[in-house]
Amino acid sequence: MSIGIIGAGNLGAAFARALARNGIAASIANRSGPETLAPLVAELDPHITATLLAEAAAADIVLVAVPWSKLPAALADLPDWNGRIVIDANNPIEAPLFEPVDLGGRLSTEIVSALVPGARVVKAFNHLRPEKLSGNPAAEGGTRVLFYSGDDAAAKTEIGALIERLGFLGIDLGPVAVGGKLVQFPGGPLPNLNLVNFK
Image (cartoon, rainbow, N blue to C red; front, top):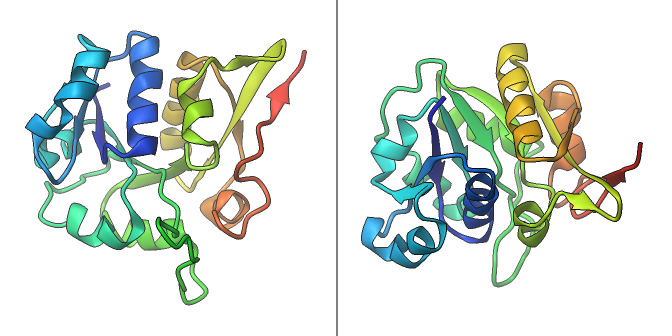
């Protein structure tokens, strides 16, 4: 399955590095254009290529990691999602103030889902710090944990398999109403926890 990344900040770049480390190809895009991603692409060559937003969004699996206030613009005027998988790796907080956004009682993934109509949304990759996501998942003699949640079982199976390919231990937290709340940052109890599974 093809993989696209929308957003080349700390988290999007960390995901790209995790993919490249495991020999998995992906395209990455930002609003500034492919030429601005030349240093990252040179670092991760030949696995990661820079492209336009619409092309990254046309992949089978698309990770979205964009500053919260820029999400509507980043996801506007993209191809129909048609059941493709969107990984919501966003958090409703951003630099420089890091003040929580008032979501009106909704979960952040519910808001992201409304911006990608027709997509099968899985919440994942948002709860670890970028350096942990791009680092070695074999930690302290165990395997670093990545949580994911979603309302589509088949989509979760795909993302769970990708998490395993990246070397992490994936833990399915159930539907977004449960798991999305647990990993939401700020507010949830699981973000920034560096959890390691020992067998």
